[in-house]
Each structure stands twice: as C-alpha cells, then as structure tokens.
Length: 341
Image 1 (cartoon, helix red, strand yellow):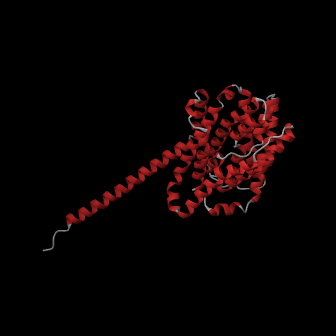
Image 2 (cartoon, one colour):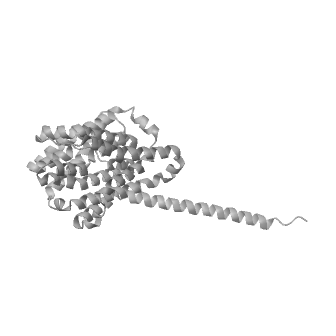
Image 3 (cartoon, one colour):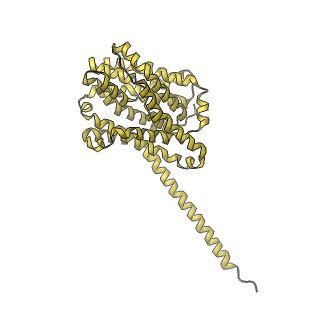
C-alpha cells in the first residue's frame, strides 16, 4: 500500500506558510526601518536647531569634533549622495548648461546684492556690513547636495552647481568684495581647487563608481543614505557653532533675522528666477537650495584671516546656523510634494 500523503502535504503547507510568514516579517521590519529613516530625515531642521542651541549653550558638546575631522565628515556626506547618482545623471546635466549659469548668477549676483541691502536695512555699518556682504559673495555649501537629495531635486545637477560656484569663488569673491567694500580678500586659489577635489569631487565620483559596479547594493542602501548625510551635517554645524559660540551669542536679534532673511529670500528668488526662464520643478528646487545654502564656514575662515575687525566674522558665524536650517526646511517641505510641474 502507498504510504499516506496527508501528513506530508500538511507538513509542506506548514513549511510554505512558515516561509511566507518569515518573508512578511522581514518585509515588515524593512518597512519599519525605512519609515524610521524617513521620519529621522524629515526632522532634519529639528536636529540642526537642537545641535546649534546645544553648541551655543554648551560648546563642549560639539567641540570634540575637531577641525581635522571636517574633511572626512564632508567627504562622507558627499559619498552618501554619490551612491544615489549615476554617470547618466551627469550626462543629462551637461545638456543643461543654462541651469548651471542661472545658479552661478544667483550665487554671485542675487545673493551679494541681497546681503548688502538687508545689512543696510538693519543699520549695519563697518565690520558687520562687510561680513554680511562676504556671506553673500561666497560659494555654495556642500550640504546643499544632501538637501537637494531629500527635496527630490536633481542631485547630479546640484553637484555640478556646487563645484562651479566653489571654483568660481577663486575670482568672484575677491572681485565682489573689492567692488562693494573696497577691500581685497586674498584667497588661496590652489588650496580651494584641492579642497574641492578632496571634499566634493573625489567622494562623489567614488560613490558614482560604486553605484556603477554594484547597483543592486546601492539601490538597497539608498533609502538610508540620507541618514548618514544628516548625521554628518549635524556634527559639522554643531562643531562650527561651538567654535564661535561667543560671537553668535553677542550678535543680537537684528543680525539673526538678517541672516535668516538672506538665506530664505535668496532661495525664493533663485527658485522663481529659474522658473521664469522655463525650467522644470526639479531644476527650480535645485537652484533654490543651491542659492539659499552658502558655505558660511568658509566665509568665517576668510573673515578671520583677511578682515581686520573681529566683528566681520560674526555674520558668517550666525549664517552657519540659519543657512543649514533654511536649507533643511526647504528640503523637508518639498520632500512630500510631487516634482511634476
């Protein structure tokens, strides 16, 4: 007689059910982790505000992040953006040189003029006026690439824009300062080129290379890469603020509001300037974030090295916080909104 098959079938069904339950359990866990990652990134502005307040009130909370760590943290931030980008993304960007040109104009045309008039509006003179103009005339910040990623903008285009304004500051920042302030700001051009390669280009293209060689792996970790960028940015902002907590505390409310207005209105003007010439929503968001987010830490360094009065560095110190908060708020605001025009 043939052996009874009922128990075997039951056993097989039970195994299939168990496997299915296991797969559902894994999927549920992955979904929970993805949701937690999204929630964490949505609170980007909150983490920045908390870190900035903590660094101002108690500088040792972030002063352990030494300046020698900055290159590594910025590189990690850029790498986290690079693995979500492909070579084809950059090829598409090269077909739109006009968008890069608009951002360059926004960075070195709109922002310096806006900074000058906002400074005048609060009655700033001398060193504070010079510091505000300097903030307006420096290059775009590297954290803009992360905010563009979160906002659903064009990451590859953002990287090209950041690189173009960073290289452009070699001649644009001294020129603007000379024209507006009558002061020449000497800049180590070769140093800026090397820093751009180390902090922006090398880690970005390392990430792009990994995405090309192991696209499956990069696709799997892509939902979590913004978390790395957020943590890196929070540490960088906290450390920058901790190093200049005293001037930030002494800046006063008018200068705080002036720096907030500079980054916020600069981003809005950049968005509508791009929209006016017919670019799509993703490009407009990218230009807005690139315009709003300046490399304030670099401005603080330039003011420290090349402007005599101590107060000239105060606007850059205040700007470090507001630049990051405005950029992150724009990123989170746009994240849940479709990019279709």
